[in-house]
Image (cartoon, one colour):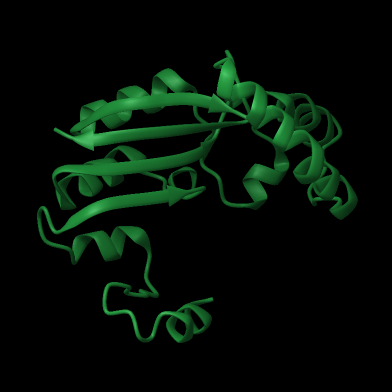
Length: 170
């Protein structure tokens, strides 16, 4: 996707497309050089997530933001997770602790997609699915996620298929 991204953002000097691992890229960035880091389904792919979080907090400017979206609940770890290169799924307290120890002041850390826990557990954990069924993905995205999101705006779920974390650098 690097070529597509380069073409799309070629006229925007604020966008840089790097074709290296996050670990390699972060090592080239100076202390306090970044105002926001957004990671959607990235941290679970990094073997040494504690070191990566330290590096991300290092490159954030003072009061910079760290926004993380990761898969949740170790008990949902499946063959599909492994095929996707996931080293782990997180529990909220674990992610909170790791970000805090790395230098982040967690503003919000909550589970997301409560309704997605059961289908993931059934299809991927118990039945061992290693691919996504496009029809089920469509149904989930069209009906389950909007309902789950609406409910979760009112009630913070005690667990979910994912975790959303927002932190500021201390």
